[in-house]
Image 1: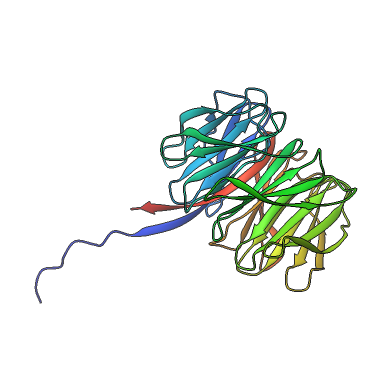
Image 2 (image 1 turned 135 degrees about the vertical axis):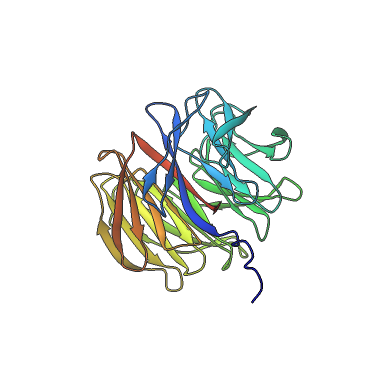
Amino acid sequence: MGPQGPPGVSERRLSYGYVVNICDDTVTPINGTDGLAEPPISLPNAPTYSIAINANTHHAYIPSYNDSVVDVVDVDANQVIATVPVGPNPSILDVNPNTNRVYVPNTNGNTVSVIDGASNAVIATIPSSLRPHAVAVNAVTNRIYVINDGTRDLSVIDGATNVLTRVVSFSASIPWYVAVNPNTNTVYVASTDGIFWVVNAAAGAVVDFFGLPTDYPSGLAVDPKTNLIYVTGNNGIMVTINGNTNGIINTQTLASRISGIAIDPDTNLVYISADLEQAMLLYNRVSNTIVNSIPVRCPTAVATVTKVSVG
């Protein structure tokens, strides 16, 4: 037998959630795999209730409503690398990882800013309807969906041309959160009156709607793999909806109040911000139970990313 070679390098895939801490202008990395909160990252500007992470570049984007900028954080180095001026009062943004573009609704500018993730500069400003509040991106079709609470509708933007292609109305409801399942090309909207809307993106039309057993919605997330949709409310209730049938299949009270939710697509973890409990809840989608509660100051919006640890 010849001499034994050196041991190979081992890798661990770690689930992370990055949560915005609204009361002290920081973002806290949560290692969900090991159940640990890491030291918070200080932000130069007061954050809005929003964060999105490009899974390809590992850059996180956090808007500041009052300062009209977007802070960019390298989540591998855990440090701010840029601050990008945008339009007046940016709100809930989203990113297309395929094109490395970030779409920022400017609530009081009635526009959407497009940030180039490579240069961290605004490359386009798209007119929108009144008071754009939230954005969701379908990275497969390169369509951007913008919720406008002032006109109570949904603007559809072609990401290749930055041109508005369609508007979908929600009648009397004020839309507040929007999410997309790229596998089914379906858009989901939760409105402030507790109505859940289902939009067929190809047809550009509402195909279903129903009431939710929650008060004011506080979060919306889609699992494309299972076609399950999760809606949270200020009363601490999380509702699970089957995207195949558009029916409610589970309702659970998880906290006194929930202020943010994000799904890790690579694991069974869901990250849920329980702001009154000052904790991040880790929820297992298989067992439908909370498996960990991690103390965090003033948690609000959260986004997930997978990191690789070598050692």
